[in-house]
Image (cartoon, rainbow, N blue to C red):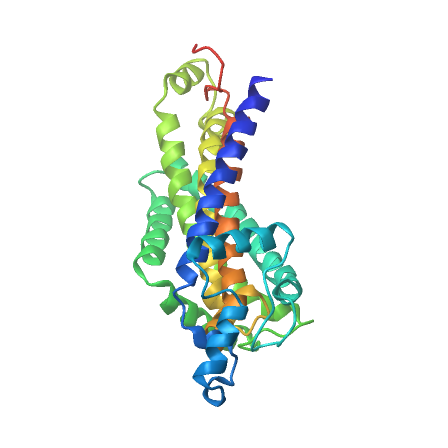
Length: 315
C-alpha cells in the first residue's frame, strides 16, 4: 500500500511538472515569428489580411487566454494543423506516421547501449588497472572528448566505405540501420560503461564483499552473485539521461541519415517555418523527457528496497 502511495505521489508530481513545462514551452513558442503561420505565402499577403488571420487564430489575445485555449485543445487531442509541409492536415496525423520509426530506432539504440555498456563496465571494474580497464577507459574518454557531430560524420563516412553500404537510410534494407544505430548508441554505451564501473568499484569495497571472500567465494562468484546485483540498481537512475540523450541525438542523426522520423521532421519544420508542427513536436519531446525522469524514479523505488517510501517509518 505504501509503495502504491509512493508511486501515485511521484506520478502526481510528474503531472504537475509536465503541466508547468508544457505551459512554459507554449508561451515561449509564442515568440516565434508570425510568418510561420502563413506558410510560404507571406510576401503575397497584405498587412491587413495578415493581422486579421492572426486575430482569427487567437494570436492577438492576451497570453492567459491563449494558454487556456491551448489546454482546452490539448485535452481534446488537438494540436492544430500544418501550414506548410502538409497544409491543412492535423499535426498529430503527421507525427504519428513518423513516431513509429523514431521509437523503433530509439528503443533499439537504448537496448544496444545497455547490452554493450553494462558488460563493459563489469569487466572494467573486475580487471581494474589492467589492460581491459585501460582499453575501456580510453574508449570512454575518446567518446566523451570528441563532439558527437564529429564522430557521427566519421561513422557515416568511414562505416559506409568499410561495410560497403549506403550512407543514407533505405526503408526495407536493414543494413542501412547499422550506422545510425551505432551513432545513436555510442555515447550512451560509453556513459553506461563508465557508471557501471564506478558502481561496481564502490560495491567491491563494501563489508559484505570481504565477508563473502572470507567464506571462500571466488572473485567471479562475488562479482556476479552479489556485487552486480547491487550495482545494477543505481543504473535505473541513468535511464532518464539515456532517453534524453537518445532524443537529442535523434534530432541530428535522423536528419543526417535521411531517416523519416520525428527528429528529421522537426528540423524540416523549423527550416520551413511550420509553427504549429514545431510547437507540437517540441511539446512532445518535452513530455517524453519528463516521462523518462518519472520512469527512472519509479524503477528505483521498485528495485531498491532501501528507498524510504512515503508514510513508511524509517528503519
